[in-house]
Image (cartoon, rainbow over all chains, first blue to last red):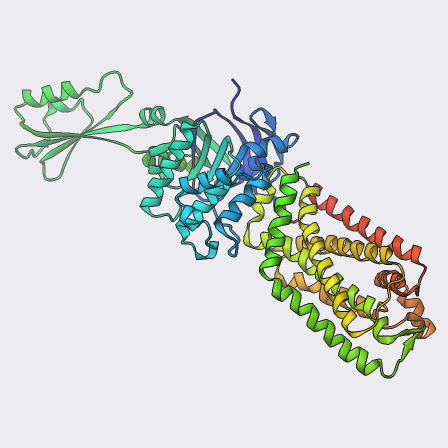
Length: 311
Length: 253
C-alpha cells in the first residue's frame, strides 16, 4: 500500500528569498507516529503548513491518502487535522460552539453526540459552556486538539503540542496520541522535547535548515547511533590501568575507584565478558557494574552539529 | 460545494452579532434619531421641500444608505480581519473550502447584519416622517444589492489591512466623504453646475439616486444607470476577491 503522506522534492522559498524547505522527500506510513525533531527555524512548521494548505509550495508535490494537496485539496484537507503551535482561538467563543464550528467548516454535518465524545475524551466536557478567555493555557491547548479532531481526521499534525505544558497535561496528551494511534490515525508531531519523541514515536525524522537529515525507526536509530557505556566500580582504587587492559577503550576516574568502558552496541561482540575476565586475571575486585545508553538527545545534538560544521 | 462550511461560517459570524445585539440595535436607532433632529429640524426648517417631498422624508433613503454602507464595510472587514489578527485564520486556510464558500459565509453574514440595520433605520424613520415607498421591490433590491456589494468591498479591506488603523482608513477617508458628498442629504440639482458634473464621478451618487427613486420616483441619474453602477461594483469586488484567493495575496504565505 502507498504511504499515507508522500512528500516529493518539496521546496518552499518565501517572498523575501528565504529558503525554508530545500527539497524534502518523505513517506509517512498509515497508522504510524512520526516525530520531527529540529531546532527553531528548521522548517518543521513550514513543512506542516504546506501539507495542510496554509502555505503554498514553491515546487515539488505532496499527496495525502493518494490525493494531491493542490488538485484534490478538498479530499486531502478533509483527511487532515491540525493542532497549531500557537494557541489561536477566539477569546469570546464558547468551547462547544468553537468545536462544532470546526466540524462544520470541514464539511461534516452537525453531530452533537460526536462533539460531546471528543470533549469528554479531552476532559473538556465540564468546560463546554465556558468562554475560551476563561480557560487556562493547558485547557486552551486541549480545545485546539478538540477542534482538530472534530471532523475525525485520518492524519493528525501536532505542531509542538506540549510546548509550555505541565507534566500532567503532557502525559494526558501522550495517552490521547496513543488512543488515536490505536484507532489507526497517522500522527505527525514536531517537538523540541526529545524525551517526547523517545516516549511515543515509531519513527524519528531530524530536520535542520530546511533539509531532512534522516528519518529512521526510533529503535534502529538509537542502536545504530547509540553508544553504550559500562561503568565498573572497583573495591580498591587503582593508580594506573594495567598494560594487559590496553586493548580496551577504557578511562580511569580521577579517584581511581571506577573505570568507564565505551562500546558499540551494533558490534558483534561487546567485549564485556572478556573485560571482566581480564579484570579478575589482574586481581582487580569489581564492586558493581552499570550500563547507560546515549539518548536521542545526544544523537540529535551530534547530527545537527555535524551538518552545521559541514556547512 | 461545502454547504456545511458556508453555514458554519455564517452562523458563527451571526452569533457574534447576536452577542452584541443591543449595541447593534441601539446605536443605529440613536444616530438616526440624531440625524432627524439635526438635519430634519435645523435644515428642514429652511428647506421645506425638495422636488415636492418634505425634507425629512427626502433624507431617509440617504440615511439608510449611509448606515448600510458603513455597517456592511465594517462588519465584513472586521469579520475577516479578526481571524487574521488573532491567528484563527489557519483553520479557514486548512479547511476543505474554496474562496466562494468563504466569501458566501463571511459576506453573507455581514450583508445580513447590514440589512438588519437598514430595516431598523427604515422603521425608526417611519416614526419621524410620513414615508411612501413607490417601488417596494426596487427598494428591497437596491438595499440588498448595496448590502452585498459593500460587504464584498469590506471583505477586501479586511484582507488588505495589516493593522487596525488600516482597517479604519478606507471607511473613514474614502467611504464617509463619498457618502456625504453623494447626495445623501440633498438633491444634486441643488448644486452649482460645475459641482453637479464633479459629483457624477462619485459612485455613491448612483446608489443613493436609485434608492431614492424607489421611494419617491425622483432620481438624479437614470435608474437603469444606478442599477448598472451597483452591479458593476459588485462584479468588480468579486473579481478582486477571486484574484486574492487565486494568488493567496496577504492570506497564504
